[in-house]
Image 1: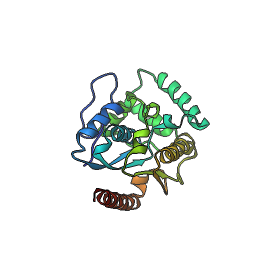
Image 2 (image 1 turned 45 degrees about the horizontal axis):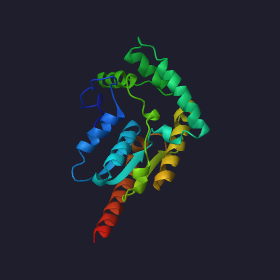
Image 3 (image 1 turned 180 degrees about the vertical axis):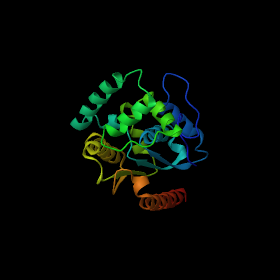
Length: 225
């Protein structure tokens, strides 16, 4: 099952102070886990997945995080500390009159990436992002994940081929965060080529997921004997 976050894809907009909120996303995830599932989250969705897994570890069979945006868990690192200061200031200074088109250009041109066509879907995503609760500042308790009986896989790109500014502003902090998360929860860290792992290397990522899920299910079955 693929779940869109509020304000994205096929999911409804979120009414409230934020247009998207990782705590609401976490509750949404818990509501669709059924009697247990392998949980995968990317970026902002990775933060929601971590929160959901920490809240209901009994409903998780494995956890995979693809470049999770939970920067605050690594706030003791100087690169992350600087990023948090910079991001908090930038968020506070975001012009109230900025349009979705302007935000889309800022979010791409500002890091050396080409601005994609302003389709209705992308403009909706841009509007949602302009009013999101920042995932990089989310307080995430990693202890329930570290104590859980199921395994965690953290996937990160090597950021080869990314524009230098994008690598500096996003790639380095995401890599640091991924390593901290993997280390603190006792998870496996997988590095793949590029900077959008599941988009640029889908076959590699899907193969890793299938093997990871099979191993997790085998270990679960063994423990149940």
